[in-house]
Image 1 (cartoon, rainbow, N blue to C red):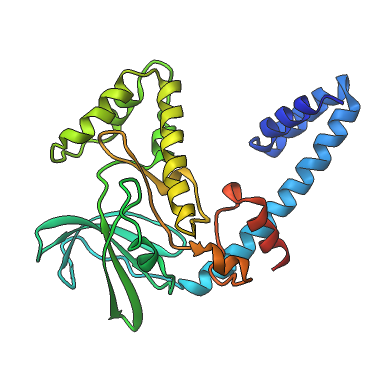
Image 2: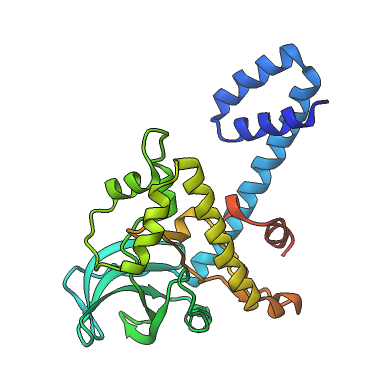
Length: 282
């Protein structure tokens, strides 16, 4: 059997709907029955495992965050004025806010999670990992909220950028089309932007990948495992610099080695095999 063809066919079929899969598998069966049987078996196992993991994670996350009330635009929480809702995940809601005491824009993460995200981020000073400014505990609507004040990156997620990729535009042009925010001039960052602008799209994406590997390597060298690397957790600033965000389920390597799996989490499509095994057997 051609294993490279098996892998390529599986990747193609895994992203298709059931009716599309049936038609594709039938076409494959007519020319290679053995390949079709292997693909059917792999797809069946893939769907079963993915559904199991997603349901288990939903139960875990729902127990951690039973429901956060949406903050209103203009509302004040501590010294922060809510300006815009930026997004939400399984454990938190994130807002653009103005720190009225310091007069700067920040990202305000509101969560019920008892994770050590703020303490973890406080150990990093690398340009490429979102900085944490402060953490506050607030009681609101009978809930004990954890409010984390973070560096605001005025740019889209890599997930959003990936949805706009096309061969006719450079990465810089794509960023300009989806990021209307005005930011303060950073002369040092212009060199990175000029470097990206000189590359074609493929080369620019490779450069982003190299930079993200450096950032992640720094975290690992510091003994921290992010555990939820995915395009939605990577921010791209107006200069094209990538930032790693959302350390909500991160942990220290020594804890994991000792069997402390309390904060083990992640996203099914992006999990490492080690994380997948935990959710299948834990």
